[in-house]
Image (cartoon, rainbow, N blue to C red):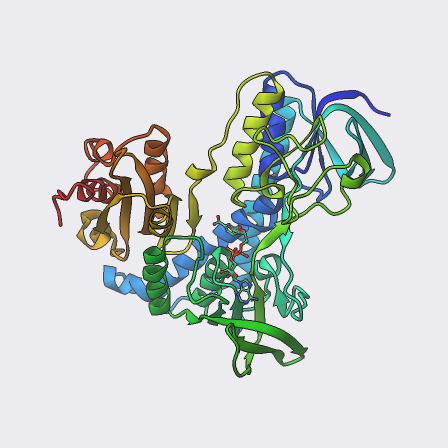
Length: 468
Ligand code: NAI
């Protein structure tokens, strides 16, 4: 049995490593157990960071390929060196991952490489990566084990021809024809990467819309933009099976509401129909930790499971499955365990799709406001009327701000446009402070900047946009 800890965190992703660092900063003795061999979890190793590296590289290629000419830059047609592009992506991942090891050392978090299993509310057994076993004794356990790809029955992932997001970040050549199953965040981001690099991409989506959960008008406009870029959408269809041959994959596809099946061929198929909490082999039964009806670890608002001293955060519990939400959970829990206050408002967690243009949202959609019967006003401003966007030759999209007419608080913001993922931050802050659209409108915004579109949308909520 090894030394006593205040907290043993199982999982070194954005939820777990941030929780460990914050708790250590507050003077607690913390160990973080991670089985991957590197810190950073799905996000840094095979998710957010490598996908953003490829999204940026492929965006630059598309700019050079299609848009340089508009700017008066003449080049011979550019070529993709995929090996080099992938190597750069790997370097980006490596430097991020190493950065966390440094932060652990700096903050005196003990990093234990291995798979953790809960033995009891005060003991975690670690199957060490280097061999052997160690049992850690602790006052508190934090489950931060994240999520895994939701499998699609009949479509078995081999990470070569039928890939998950992990395999789609590692392809050794540009597929001629790619089918993406699921028009969610992963499908649109990685579908865009491979389309830009030269694949013919079809996105098959079960529902009759893309980006479910996001504002309907935002999703419609986004679909129009992506279709113009060359992504093909087959909405209202489901994939019921896949046959893999040397020459490619044959998919059986049917209308979601029933009807004749058809066969669609592809060189590579990406399955992106969602993720589910990962809790396998964690020993939850040993301690009697309960799951909810969707397989998530059940917690109260203080991240406490049904067992005293065992907590859970991030993708493993309820709430949006996003790295930054997991980080917020981690910080709030660390502060509570150190005797301070902690709270995360899931209603103010921004969501971003890192395509070009980007898509970003926070708070309520128009559909949600209608459903709950809230009387609201809409302020909308298109990027076509923004000077900076024009100068950038990136005028597609809009900012939409939703304000509750009774309380005058901003209750939602939906953006598709250049740098939407950064623009949304202002509105998240405004919502945290309970601001009105007028508060945003009366704040001086630099000119010429994309952020002026947020200000103009706020003005428009009051019917007084200047540039429209
Ligand atoms: P998702 O939940 O965003 O989208 C899955 C899509 O697949 C949905 O539109 C759903 O209707 C569709 N679908 C489900 N079953 C289907 C079927 N049998 N046939 C056709 N379509 C089907 O899930 P996704 O894109 O896999 O992402 C997983 C998680 O990772 C999400 O929670 C997402 O938020 C997160 N993520 C976030 C990123 C970001 O913040 N930029 C980037 C990548 C992932």
